[in-house]
Every structure is written in C-alpha cells, then in structure tokens.
Image (cartoon, rainbow, N blue to C red; front, side, top):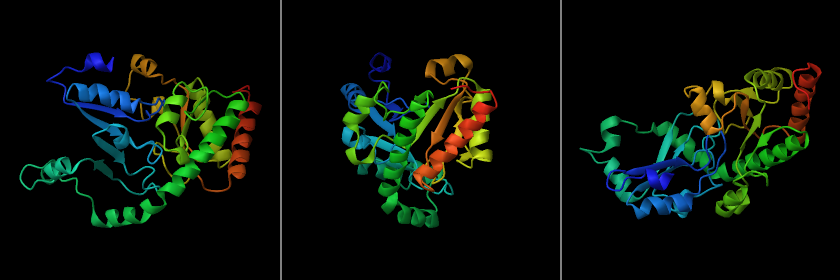
Length: 271
C-alpha cells in the first residue's frame, strides 16, 4: 500500500511512527526505508514511543523525531521536541536567512535544554524498567483473561518483527493497551485504578515515572470519526497505559488486582 501510494518525483517524505499510537502496531522500518529510498523519498520516523528500544537511524531512517516531553524527559514537566538528522539537514534548518528554526522560532529554552541534558544519562535505566514492568504486567493481565495488546507478547502480530529490530537489552516498550470493549467499561476501570487503588493517573501523556492511562478513542484519537477509528483498530474501550516504575512491581500489581476485583464486584466486568 505504501509503495503504491508513493508518487515518484512528487512524494517528498515518508513519515511514520516506529510503534503506533495507540494501537502499538510496529512499523517495518528497514523495508519501508528501502521502498522510499528506491523512489528518492526521505524517511522520517517518530520514535517517541520507543527511545533506545529502537534505533531507526540504524535501520534506514534519514531523520528521527521525538516528543521529548515523554520518555526522554520522564518528568511530565517539559514541552519539547527534537529533530535528529544529518548535518546538512540540521544546518539548513538553522540557516540564518532561510532556516525553519530561525524563521519559526522553535529554539529550545536553554534552561530546559540543560535540565534535559541532566536526564538523558539515566534514560537507559528508566527505559529498561518501564519495559520490564510493561512486559510483566502484560503477561499477568493476559493470564487473567484480559484482552491485552503489547508487542512483547508472543501472540502480538508484530512481535517477531520488533524482536528482529530492537536493541536487545531494552525490551519491547513501556506502553500496553487493554481493550475493555466499551468506553463505559474503560472509564470505570481507569476510575477504580486511579481513585480506589492508586495504581496510576488518568492523563493523555506518557513516559512518566507514574503509570498514566487514557481511553484513546475519546481523548488523543477523538478527532477521528467512527470509520477511521475502525480502520485504525481503535476500539471504543481501548485503554492506553504507560507503565511507570514508582513503587515496587508487586505493590503496583496488587493495586491493579484490587481495582479489577472492585470492578468485578460491581458487575460491570466479568472475567
């Protein structure tokens, strides 16, 4: 589909997420890059969901972008982004007379840049724990009979693809999804997780040291109509969960079980 959509001589950029938001589909970065490069198209990959887990530049991407506000910052207190690319691209963007950075002004506040420089050294440690807990929770949730979407699970359709591309020591990402089927069930579960069990917070961000949850269909993907959501695989009850690392893993898991038990007792959800 991508190959047929590229119009040689007119298409300039192929832009995609390494791991998609919120459905956690994994892009075949080497193959997509090959298709694009065969037709003279620049490949831009958004790697916000998988810093260190994936290295798109090593897999064929020309440019890699991140929302730094997420995992790289880790503190949910900074709004920033980054464009990583070859020197000729970055220098052209910084050109005094014609550069987009000079004309449009997205230059990072130096205090923010300094704070980020202090956080990046421990990004690797944070990502390993995010990913470890996400995989552990996904496996346990699946055993409870919940419908879990996580590319670290062997039954995920893109598990082997991600495994073949990933930097081995960092796991499969810090996000998982639970499909609760309806928005009402999704909101009820998140309410219990936040307000009854103190498992995490309802918020549309991710990559924080606390677990953050959102019902994607009615929040970050609410601009899509029903047909577009169905095409993207976003069900009304899809809960996107960014797994944090505060507290012990077992403490957090007991909080999840507590909320799930309360939900079952209410009769809204039956395992």
